[in-house]
Image (cartoon, rainbow, N blue to C red):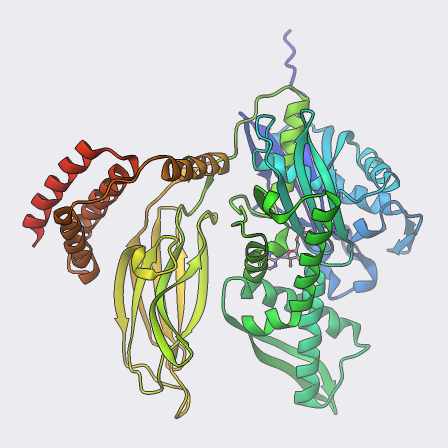
Length: 579
Ligand code: AMP
């Protein structure tokens, strides 16, 4: 008889305040273990008289119906002796956390088709010993041996490939649902760990939801002269709607909220229908975002570092998907934050990597599909009464995980403007025409909402996994749309490859004398750019021409005169054909 021994797997668990996830390393690659399509499960436990105990989405779904028997954010209570009452029973915070961990263990076993008994669990860097111990106990109650508790920022850094060969100083900005945590992670004496950390245990996506929810309550009150205060069910519904609205506003410049039958007045049902713009939302949370910047200052001070000492910035936590978060962090640090790995998956992936390291497995870097260049359109701005055109407005930042959809609103310059030309570019330069033109088209017959107002359009970019960029422009007044698909450059790189490639390129730029192009070659390049700008070339011709120009650029940067001369000859031939 032959007995088969299965390898003892150590999974990585991100036991979050709002959401939790479980991951594993297989063949050197970490991956999230999903339940159906869901990679994250809400950290919510609930009791329903019909179905008994519920965990994850079913529990979250019953929250609006039965908030009293639904437990959210148990992580805030872990390590305390507070008792939680639900379903007519009393629980310790460990027991509630254990229900979430048991669900994650089950998800892992269903995926891996084998028992899972060991885990690495992450906790915030600011957790006390009592909180760490309680987390460990929760694991044990759930039937998991907790082989290690690691800090969330350390896990994030591991997911991003902070290995023992690099000694980068990394700032991990972790903005989740209920907590904000900013840490400096680096390597000292061969160990990757947190050098300083600063947390705000009461700041996160929940607060953003609350601000929006208060805004909706006020709108409701203004419309119906009726207050929803004290109406727990209506408020729970508004809160969920606020979260959904917030998430939509991460990808769209505006959205409409519709909630029917929130309350009744004189037997008449009262609904709420209102439009929210992203700008309004950012305005509502502006002071909260500024608080996160103050924490960055504090953590730098604790680590005795200046902002210039930072090498990398990582964004972790679901709330960092808000575009304003990306902007405020990148403006303040002067570093483009890495966001290749889904911010709400990085911690679990890192925990899985730690698990694999403990069990002696080789771990490769994470492969992700990202946009290698930023994508945007040419716009104009009016500064001091002067019109400055050829400005580059990015819709999708480079290194964003694909597929991705982004939408922004743009305005015409004058009320009687009837058409807008859309020029789609790929690149990083602030002057639009310094980037690569991918395509152009015009939307006409625009209408302004009222006399004297300017027409406006929504520009939507859908970038798919094959590198196709689908651009859709909609006249906001008439709803008329115009679409175009263009092929952007593709890449499949690990974050570490991208970082390496970028530093390599920077070095190349600074080390080598850049060749000066001869006047003839410059004229050829100008003619080529004009042809590309005209948009009259067949797609394949345009691609070949762009490649040739890029080869010329490389030869120039690398200082290869022979190659440059050959390429200039080739360009002359190609132009002869095309013109
Ligand atoms: P985490 O604790 O890291 O899972 O983060 C959860 C928080 O991220 C919740 O408040 C979510 O509403 C928020 N979140 C998730 N996705 C997005 C998004 N696309 N835009 C804004 N907030 C988001």
